[in-house]
Structures are given as structure tokens and as C-alpha cells.
Image (cartoon, rainbow, N blue to C red):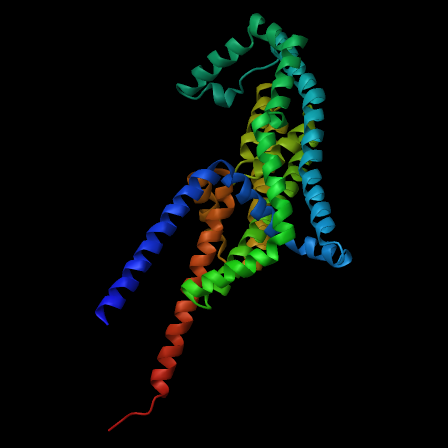
Length: 363
């Protein structure tokens, strides 16, 4: 009996080492495409209910349904990027030219409250004096420089070949996620049940629900914040309010990102001496635009996943710091699965305690 057991153990160890080696080699092979694959899975999980409706209408053509859904997702990214690029080309040149005109006319001045601040007031006055110099203003007003800046911003936004290639790989992977997603999920469940038992189904469901909730929560929050911010930019009379609203919506995809847009815009108004408009925009951004983040995101994410919103925030921020943009989804998913495990263990503990209390006492 000892020899067969030792041979079986040796075989299992050998298979385990071989599996680890193959996983390491697979990671090296797939590492350039992991980000694209992760985004494809995120988009597939987020849009899966929509795809199910489309597939029900095209029940005899599942491949066509997967292809059409992939094209819809592609257009959902490409069309806004092109629209924003057109805005950058048109409105950015006009906004930069207006800024140059303001500087050359000496229309910018530091508010008295800021000028009287110790140390900081002198630094701000020196900076404003440098920006108001004739050389800087004339350069800022020059049409070639403005056009060049717009072209660079447009290229940075959507023209890099490497990002386009990654986007193409993500779309290719997304097509196969739609086409073979259910079969892949069944295989993943079978392997996971073999390793972790039937409890793994609850963990996979928690991961899918959190991914879907974070995706739609981020998009809904960014859209609403962009709209409200755009109303504020238009009301105070800023140039290019639509462009600023679109940029605000982009920054809103990152937690606490919108102040990076409306705070500089309000400071620009203050430097022009428009104290009421600048203070009003600061209050609007602080009390309305930023609070949208605290209202819409909890309703969409926490309401559909039963995960405390503070964990969602920590997951988004921590995941963003650890894994980049993909971490905005990976972080909350990890915490959601951890919370599902925790709740299941608590429930098992309660059941065991209740069973112990119901057990008859023995003499």
C-alpha cells in the first residue's frame, strides 16, 4: 500500500508543478493582452443583459448577435471620442485665443483677499505678472500655436496607434465573450466547484454583479456630473462650456476628479475680477457637481450589490492605485467577493450555533 500511495503523491506533485509552469508560461504569453482581455470581460459583464435581449431576437443567429453587440459597444466609444475631438479642434483654439487676449490686455488681476495672503499672495502676483507679459500673451494668442496645441490634444485623446491596437484587441475579445461567454462560465463554474465546492457560485455571482454595478455607476455618475457642470459653465459665461462639460465628464470617471476642471475654471473667473461668477462656480461645483457623485454612485452601486458605499470607494481608489484603470473594477470586485465570503461564514456560524442550542442535552 505504501508504494502506490507514494507514486500517487509523486504524480500529483509532478502535475501540480507542471500546471504552475504552464500557468507561468501562459502569463508571459498573454501579458501584453491582459489589460485588453480584462476590459473585454468588464464590458461583457456590464452589457450582458442587453446582449441577452438582442440574442433572444436573433435566436437562430448567435454569431450575428455577438457581432452586432460588439459593433454597438465600439460605436459607444468611438462616436463620443470623435465628438470630443471635434470640440477640441474648434472650441479649444477659440478658448486659448481668448485667454491670450485677456492676458495681453492686462485684464487679469489677483483678488484682494488672495493678494493679502502672506507668502502665497506674493507668489501668485509674480506668477500672474509673468503670465501677463507681452511675450507670453502674444505666443498664447498666435493661431499656429493654438492650432498645434489642439492637434496635440486631439492626438493624445484618441490617435495613438498603441491605444487603438489595444482597443481592437479588446473588441476582438469582447466578441468571443459574447459568443462563448455562457460556455466559458459553465467551464469556470465546473473547475471552481471542483476546487472550492458549490459555494463558489455565490462568489462568481457577487463578482459579476459588482462589475456590472461599478460600470454603470461610473458611467451614470460621469454623465450626470458633466451635465450639471456644463450648466454651471454656461451660466457663468465661460467660453467653450460644452467642451468643459465633456472634459468634466471624462475626469468624473476617476473618483473626485471633477474639481480638477471646475476649480481652475473658477480661479480663471476670479483672476478676471468676476468675483461673483467665480465664487458661484466654486459653490456650484462643491455643493452640486461633487454631491452628484455622493448620490448617483451609491444608488447605482450599493443599491444593487448590498455592498457598503465606503467599501466601494476604498475598492475603487485602492484598485486604481494598485492596478491602474482596470483596478477601478477589480478593487470593488475583490471586496465584494470578500464580503460574500464573510457573510456566508457568518451565516454558517449562526446555523451551527442554532443547531448546538437545539441539540438535546445528554445526562
